[in-house]
Length: 268
Ligand SMILES: *[C@@H]1O[C@H](CO)[C@@H](O)[C@H](O)[C@H]1NC(C)=O
Image 1: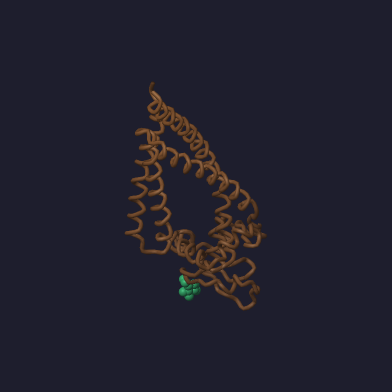
Image 2: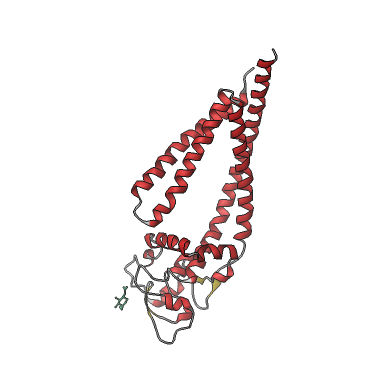
């Protein structure tokens, strides 16, 4: 009798094994290339993911094709934990990204973001100095604020006030409206004495490497970004979860086959 489930598990795992090779190679390449803290932040999770996929798919290939029951058992255990973990993570992330939204500012095209509006758990993550320094280095490397002055940086104030800015641009690249600073370019504002006492107004600097990257509004902008990205990730997670459950079920059949085959050998 052809053991279809064993072959399927074998083929699926050969695919995951092949996938793990470029991921691992990419992680190692990143660790060689990385010269900013932002890039270094990614290399460890990528390498870990590559090694994890490689080990689990090897266990699946050998377990299914060579009928090694304990390897297949290990493979199924890891898959089961992965399904439970992904399920919990999806629910948790839903709860955590439920709160918070941008606030409309009068006579402005953009919204502004307040850290206090977002969930306490997320606030704690971005308030950790270690986490924030990493995120900040990614923002500084990115084009988020530079893209505002790419067009020659002589946008008149009236035009700028009408622009729709992304949450990160609004929070990190310009001072709060409350500060009442004088507009020069989108990322250059002159401080005035009669500003508000908001700490974000003190944190502002026209130096392109400082801007409002230390502001609470920048952290809030990031959380708003995460919140809207989360909706896309949730859909992907759901598809992936269905896929994992199908693979897990096929794996269970292969495991049962292994045990039946072994029983057959033992009691002819
Ligand atoms: C901001 O504008 C002022 C006035 O034009 C200028 O003196 C200053 O060098 C600019 N700062 C930056 C960081 O571009």
